[in-house]
Image 1 (cartoon, rainbow, N blue to C red):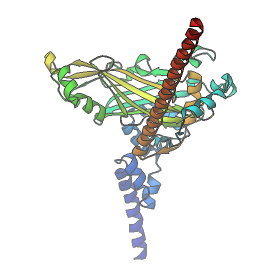
Image 2: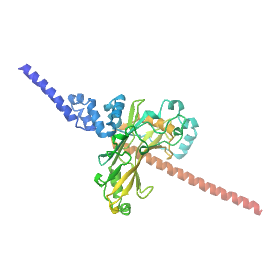
Image 3: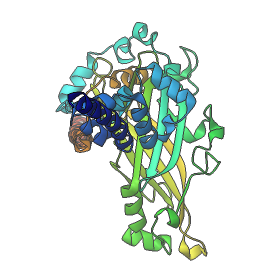
Image 4: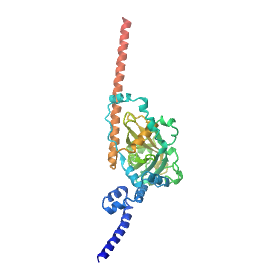
Length: 384
């Protein structure tokens, strides 16, 4: 009787493992991670790489390509990749700058310090960085692309290292452009219409008044921009997932710019110690209901650039160093912390700009008074 009971228990355990796997493979990443803490059986099964491969493929369709799968396997597997890229970068160490102190500190940096350590840079190559980019609108994937290396960055002494760093995804082709990146068979033609969830607008004049299209676009977009360094086997998501803001009707009446990003550490790289990674998406209104067609938008730009605290573009040399450091900085699964980090940076940046304007205004007044005094002195001696 005891032997029969033991056999029955073993049979149930075997059956439960199959059922557990079938349950776990249907879960998203956060739920799967939580389930792994529920019991020993779930914990054991949740270590299966195939489960995390499914999670990554669902969340980031750009990972569902053979070359990318090989890349992820080479840097530690899908479970590690998810753990590195699902949390967002959080930087709460934004300094409370005073403009005078910032200028003093800046003068201490010589040219070699400001433009980076050449010896360290020699160990970093633009070809080491791979970008995995996915865009969603109202939970539906609308764009997915893999960019191998940083385009136009060949040659150590080339223009890339001393010019402002910028990557525009829509300007460059990837290895697998024929993989139907956006589902329409044309990688550079990404459009949104009413059928995708856009609200119909009768005219741009009406949109300027109520801003309904702008709000739906800004609130509905989600961006993931994962950077992988295959040499150091690290990866991180540089996006804020949800929008940080943007501009309506800029630079033309029919254009909308939506901004994402993160605050990255630049300690010992730049005097400001932190920089902002700006990820911009620009959409143009192609047609409205008043044009005898349904409302539609076209994605015209998807770019990355780095800016320092003064709003100056970071060059390619320092950008490579900053991106490498970003792959190992602090992250959080609480997206509100990432947003708070970006808002803190914006606040300090605004205060810095206001202080700069106050100092410049005082200098202007001083120059005016000095000029008046000099003129008065000259006039006095002339009449004497």
